[in-house]
Image: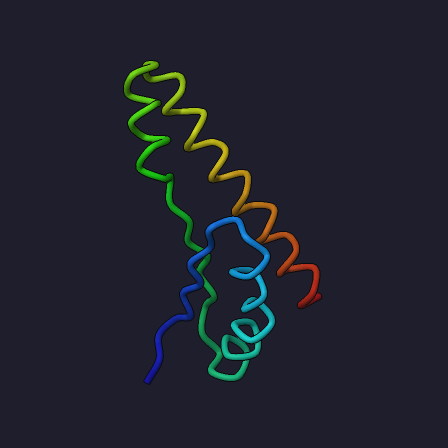
Length: 78
């Protein structure tokens, strides 16, 4: 039936409010929960203009955000 739960996140509390429901679905169907975020287009354009270091920093910020949310989700499960 279902293979995974995908939660798109934009950094807002409103987007994160779905996490408890997503966790329940993940547990109920015994499927993995995936978190997704994107680097905004204007951030990518600014990163290109500033060079690869800015692009790497934007990617690092996105990864840090997802790690933080993931830790919160894991904490609630445990």
